[in-house]
Image 1: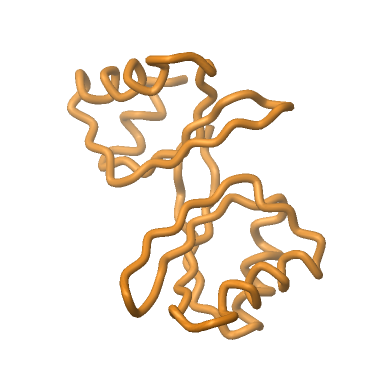
Image 2: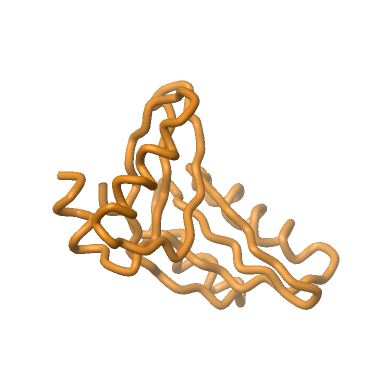
Length: 127
């Protein structure tokens, strides 16, 4: 349920995202989930990876600005309305969503990654 996400500042310049992804690839670190938010000058790449501590060290060594953030990763049914039901449950408990992203894995099914304004309350709600 609790996961450590890496948030990485990536300049919007040709090849910078490729450098980041190849650093992980060359280190045989698997990206499990990702999201990117960007503007004209930079992006913030949010990722869950197979080896968080090692990925953090590698990216810092490669000159990236990296931050660790605690998020909640929840399994969810892979069906219409599953995300709406989950968000309704959070809303009914007055838990605000800072951001979320979702993914589907053949092995694990659907999951949603959430950063919430009350992580502790959400942990109790979903445990």
